[in-house]
Image 1 (cartoon, rainbow, N blue to C red):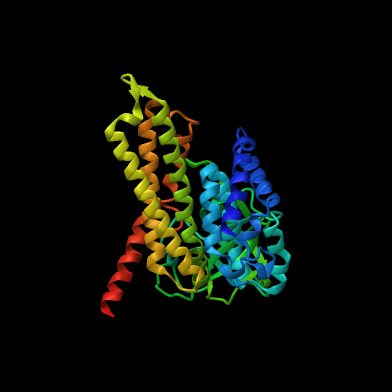
Image 2: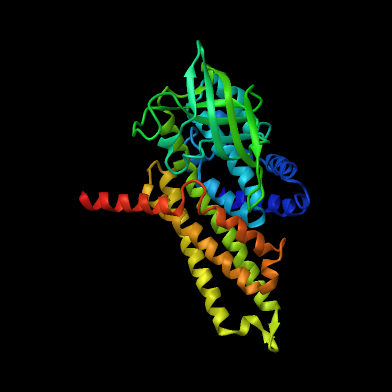
Length: 382
């Protein structure tokens, strides 16, 4: 199954490299989603029980297979960072709905997400709440059968193109009070009155922006899970998808290594190919070894999560090592290309920008170190 899906992703990626070139961010994102939907790949971001693809023995019908996500993201990232992020946001943005939404809400949205007809977004981060979700300050107050939401969300991928946001808001307590039951998740339509999108640009272009919510009202049926259950839901969503960030990193790194090998074999200096220089050969060997180690860590983590284990240490280890390794490999590929490597639009220049962001998204490298250290110390206590 995974080999077949990888081949399908490769075909879509090869087509996307040509079709997305020259398009603006929004147009490219929508075209990327169309291509993914036509190939049936978007369906793998939604559990089979709710209209997505059937992962068979890899994961229960109520879950998304992390091994499938990883296989697809690694291959998509090889070709296009935008294609990769477009794919995964369908899952990241809709998973809270699949996990805790009402039957009516699931029926209304999830099949359309799986078919690429509805664009999802995950609205958790705030100006003062990134790695520490306990600092979320956006409020949701009951208003007779519904909820009024006020606040700001920051760095929201798909802002401006999304049809809906799964959004974390405070329904009790105060930011930073340490309570785990003060947050609740809601589904907020992108066209809700009082919701404004403020777009900006980042180093690896894709639709992204901040959300300003001023008196946005949603019905109680838009609540995802129980009041006070939002933090657990947000964290379980991140836990399910975090390993796939590491897989995308290996996709970028694998492409960068490929480009380095091709360039060093084809470029001559001092009358001989660059590939004949021992120092550069040593670097290629190091790049390959680190890449394969990262891929093994990703596979270990994905199997653990699919198998029903939290795999907390394995996921943190994979995310930390794969993203840091990808940045290093892409940096070396730029160096191997010399001036061509920093020329805007070259493959390795793009890969360098795209890989860098993964050390921040869905838990920084520093957060992964804290998680891993906590797991190690806890195991020692036992």
